[in-house]
Image (cartoon, rainbow, N blue to C red; front, side):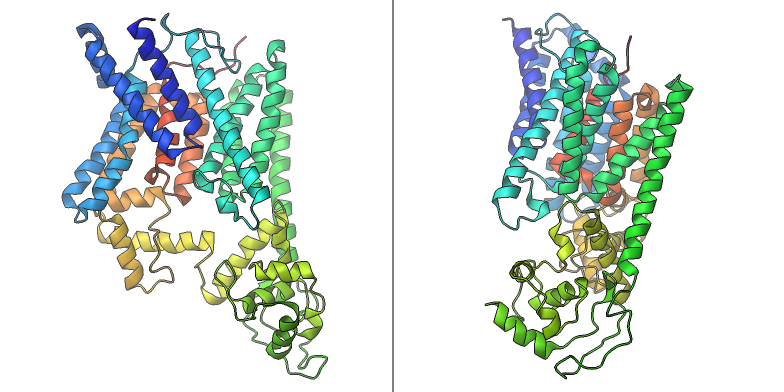
Length: 543
């Protein structure tokens, strides 16, 4: 085996490791990109002058690589007006893959010459060697997602009361959801490309099964963001391919399905919202003043609704506390595993059942209900992990809590609104050049303290990548980033390729609710596929 074969093998193994470990191991993913870069540097040293000149020429002409370099340099330059250099240097360290992976993938020789091993390829890509290698890389990626999901299922069924956020132990459930969306997209594209080829029918069937399994996993993770992203990927991809669809009948069929899907989502939403707010007994009746035992009720009349009843009406603490002591070893004033006291959890649980909060209501609780309340579950609907009603109940209760009490702490979406409002205040104080690479977190936390926000003391800062960049680099730096990447995408006409279009849809929407490029998992996900799909590999259907 020649030296060039060895470099190629290391190249492929490193890329394959990144693809697999993107969802499996941060440590292995870090090691893989370091080996990838080291292999590239060694090959650079061993190359002749003409090969080096070719690589330098590729750097000068590759606008996408220039965009990644510009983004990385923005982090470095941002240190100049930062006071917290420790945090700034740590941010730069985290961003090394942002430049290392594109540097290798976008300047190395395209993997389509005779030095490539004859790998067995995955997927119906054209049979040039480059596409067989890309197929192997995507196969590794899909297998990595599958392996991580299986580990998550084992944890889910073997660990009691495992929060959905902790099902996947390797990275956050949000980052894993992005990978699930990308995996589903690639699998569906596998079916689109290969269904008409008889040799790929078996692979298409397997791809459909895996895609449905990944979709199920989005529901298991309760990833509303992932479901919205997946829906948008489908809509954007459909309209992007509209002119390429020759059959009018197929166009009408797909459009009908799309409209039916939108109507179904709207109808489902209307049904569950109406069911949530439609007043039921006893809230639909005139308020009673005393329990069946003659003890007075307390009615707060604060307007907080859950499951068709006012949560804080029909309260009788005397009877609740007495009956609870008979049913549980825990005090009604003890704290549940999620940080709330048992009393409000019990009140919400009884309310969701449509019962009064007294001895009569307590009589309807089963031993399973008592156990659920002790675990901090405040609504019997929450016991159904894959229920649409559960998803709507969670979102609507968050809204009701904010409407009645302006509560945001502990509520996923409302916390984001509070952080966005706080981050925008910081941005308006430093609009042109931002606060620098090192001071984003400090100033965001200071602003939360200044405003006496309910989120003061949190470790979070923005939960929005666009806002984070505006705070960090200001309007000037943000405009530069947009300029370099827009120029690169237009030059290579990347949005004409559906896998790249799907990637950018996933990434751009995720940046609305997450600091996607603030973690290794998010950075590697974006730069890896962005670099891979921008190469001269075709992902279009063929005859």
